[in-house]
Length: 199
Image (cartoon, rainbow, N blue to C red):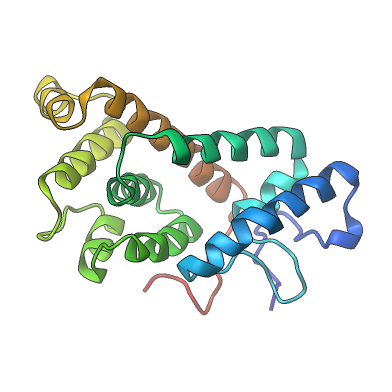
């Protein structure tokens, strides 16, 4: 079933795409589709139509490719551990309550080693008992920045002590990437697949 999975946007079929869209589609199929499959969430329909933010970026393929390249570089060059990255991403998602982002990154976070209980708490905007000190600091810093658009001096001091200046810059870049993802998902009303939506 594909009806409604694009929200306000139609789900593009490869046969309907212009050359720029098809080039981006092929890039996503070669990179993001295997990643999503390994993590355990859906990124395409049985007919080969992309869902989530991946369909949306096809409508502006040049900017979409540049944004995906930024995300790729962030993942390769960050000072943050994968668990901390997923804490940040789920925390941004908890502020936006973007169903597809929470659905997808709940799966990625579990693959990174976060417990189901921790994932559920983070998606609900709360820290979890089994998070490490650094992960709790990342959740607090990201949640405060996302909710209040600033970080108080004490939160900043603790976060800088935990991650250093490069780590904090990397955290803010990652957070910004997922503010963009969530704003795209919410602007176009893009849902999670109905069988897989967070409960």
